[in-house]
Image (tube, rainbow, N blue to C red; front, side, top):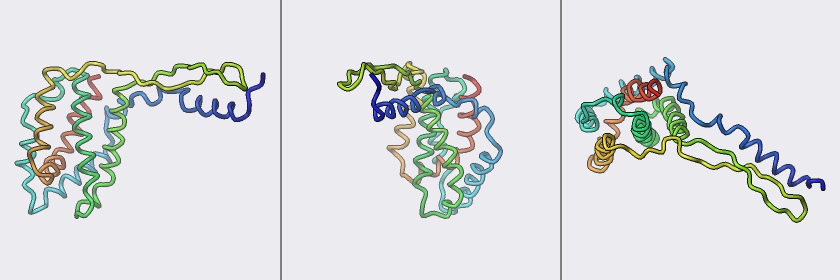
Length: 203
């Protein structure tokens, strides 16, 4: 029996969406060498923020980075989790910079970190295509391709990572939003060069 046009169109759409799930898996390799233009944009935002006469950013930055160990010393799954947490915080801060002299310098760093956040999330999951048969009254059994997410890094945060995550959580809860902004803006270059490139190159 021929498949009705509407059903055929739905099948084509679903196959288009799910036929190549591996393309959204993990674009880690692109961060092994960050482009000079992205580094310049981040450093320019950093430098402009340092010019603020009202910023007490150094103290806030020291509160944010209390750990003496490097993120590079963590195991792969922990590095991914911690880098995602820090990048998410950076995206939150950059998104909320609107009525500020810094707003004109934010767009390119925000675009970069937003894309990075999305890629980090996809690196934690892989998409598995499976097929579900449905009975249609007007057709034979039809297999629809669907997406199912399954953990790529199924390990929970290790005991070694938990102090890092707890400190990050307590920092955001205990200091002012201005202090969070100061700390994040002054640590963007470190986040970009140390955390991100260490995660990307050590996988």
